[in-house]
Length: 178
Picture 1 (cartoon, rainbow, N blue to C red):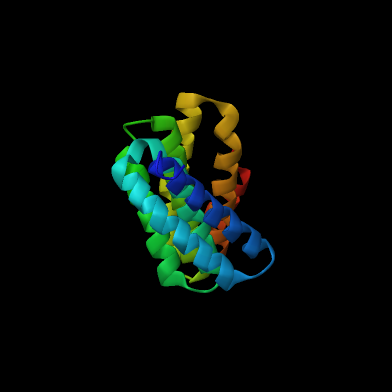
Picture 2: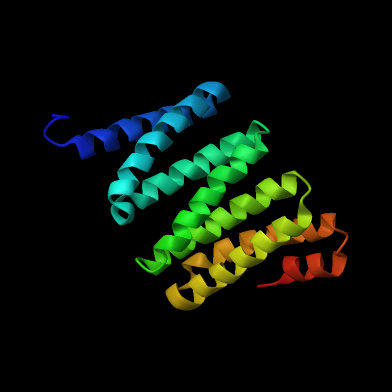
């Protein structure tokens, strides 16, 4: 069947590697999870190079997972590289499906902010959080209240960051913002 539909075969293989990576991560087997996410990403890169619009969602989710795992493993440069790829990819696709790719972009920026925060790169984290917040507020304005929880999440992250940066008045505003 892989000869009849090689694209579908690759999608299934990538999905299997990705799902196995999730299982290994849940079992705290980070290196095995990492290896599987790397395999999934390699296959998905090939797939999205052929049809970027159709296959982007799964690819971006794989980049989220790999980036978050790298952060947990303290591989910060690799975590940033993967999430930067998700950010670039989302930015390039916003015109094809604004709601979906703005959501992906805002989520990717939030993840990058967390990675930077953990490295005490507070100014860079703040820039990511603010861009994510602006996008999430636009999502609420354009597509509805289902995105309000995501706005609250980023305000909480900004509050934590500003508290750490000793910007107490700003932190208080973010915690009270609705």
